[in-house]
Length: 132
Image (cartoon, rainbow, N blue to C red; front, side, top):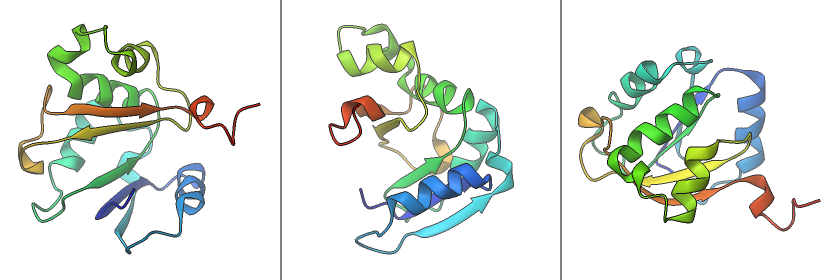
């Protein structure tokens, strides 16, 4: 994972999560944001819509239920394709520490519902080194 931009809630727990992900292969622009603390879906889209077009990848660290709502909303009609195991697991819930990775074809300013293609969904239980 090598994001160009990291948007992170200013909450201590999300900042600690960010620290656990370091070091990066390249140094991303990191923006702690009060607006992401317990942000609802609309606020998350507003924040993502301000990302510069030059940013190829963005890592968003936030809180539920907003993160789960954002991920399901990005799926759009694909959420009905429950044959895909990752989509099915994502629609069922978004556990603490989960990662939903999306491909977004257009500019960040136009990101809206149905605007992403889920490429992978990982939860802590998927990582053997963390499994109990």
